[in-house]
Image (tube, rainbow, N blue to C red; front, side, top):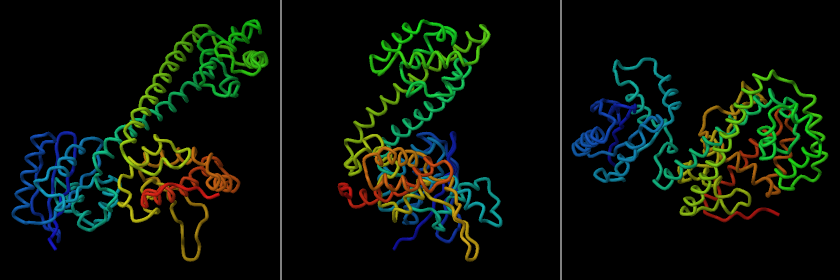
Length: 408
């Protein structure tokens, strides 16, 4: 069996600092290279010389720093001058590195301390296989699903800002669900086209009802009753001075446009993701309700499920695990979900769970059970607990490559 050397790479926007050590922790070499194509090739050439002189397995670790280390990781993995069976390339969670760094009573005097820490953590085996760089097809899909995740968060933030501004113009509408959705087309048209709550309050009822009927395309069951409810809410709302009202209207109009822009982007991402996931065979789409987008978000983060020894390891990677508080024979029942984990995988698992439980009787029974047993934040906690159960199903389907057959 060949010996192993450990290569820690501290990545920054401008440079890559490399620390190479042998299996007993002795330094072989360290150097800093430009984070550029030429710099990466210089690094690779020095690694090739090391491979030739030592003839060892090369265990690489790069700390995840946004996008700055991705191209280097791809080069290290894809270039066959060092055969694939002679290397392992992993992109590591900075929190893992930070925790390992805290275990030292003292550290060597070196300017390249982070690269040393990464190499040493690999040598001690503290970093699991879940840090392995995945295949291109997963990374390509991941670019789309992570970008979609950020757009969905942008929509949520912008909608929260919109509701805060809406309170200034039409306070009762912001407080109550006059419409089934305050972000529906008719609701936003009402806010946009009526310059003040007084205009809404004192427009003839039949004209307001006709406005609702036209903009709602006849979908409202009783537009007259809805118009009367809206006028009542308008008369109970705060009034603003005209100068402030004008500014509030301008802000609302801009926020309206921003929300619509993000929603259009989200649909475009969904279309691109659906096209790309179609080329990756998987069994998750056999689960009714999950759909191609959420299954793509899950698969993009998991990659090859064999990286995880069991479903518990996958749940921990997603951050769907809970801390333990135990002392002697006492074990607290009030525990908190861990703060670490892959935020993208957690998001797609929870969103998928919320869709699937509407179609899967067993998952919905579990959700209702947890909802009834939870004293605070019932919906949120019940959904997260149900997502943890859903991880077992995801892991089993991907591991066994089987079509989902729900229990009757």
